[in-house]
Image 1 (tube, helix red, strand yellow):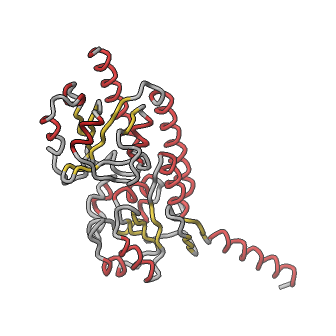
Image 2 (image 1 turned 180 degrees about the vertical axis):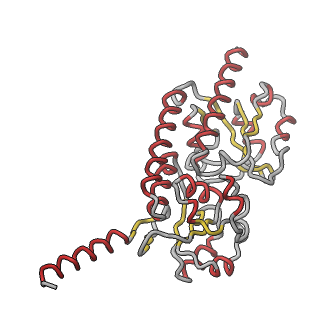
Image 3 (image 1 turned 120 degrees about the horizontal axis):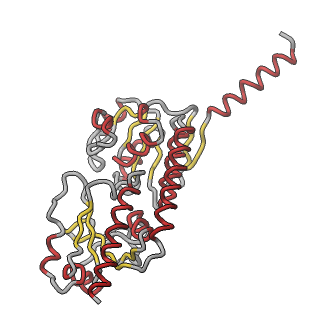
Length: 296
């Protein structure tokens, strides 16, 4: 083989190898490098499972955690525990070439342990609606499904812009979002759920608190006097968690019948279906505005 031809062939192979390698930062800023797109992925949170399926890479998932139930194909995947109680030995035995973890949901000790074992790990923690679209693109790239992921991200951004244009400039509605009742927990404005409220023209009454998921007391909620109380439960949670507010008939939300339980899962997962939740929340806040006008 002539030297020039050999050199050209080497350059082509080097370029192809460079294209195959993937280097990017996860949502915590940690660098992740893959020699090639991942083929054996373990997801440690339901939202990560949904993101990968939406990005066109669901077939690459070899295991996940409890409550990963969407899309329906996810129900058939093997389990490695719950997102807070993970079986590290099981994860390692599966020989994944990528683990997608949840920054604020999985134990940091498990994340550190998997990294120490040399398992490539991406921490997912979308904090805005655009972060969801970016997550689709990033995970699609990691799994070699860039084309499908880019299309999904573009559609997500289009739908989000459509909802924003319709509702975000409507008159503000004071909202208390209840994560849990024992102890009483909510979210601040750094949380994605609060971004959904803002998309609909809602104002989180505890948005200025410094903690992502702060604990509050009943007296603080009564003092804030929200016009609506919204709860959203994961699968397996108690369905009567909002009943506490019936004890306080002077609370504006109670007085006007604006105690609202969202359908399970769609608002609490940082995945494309959060826009389905946003549409429901927006319509509910519109009803609050109508009730406000009648009350006057």
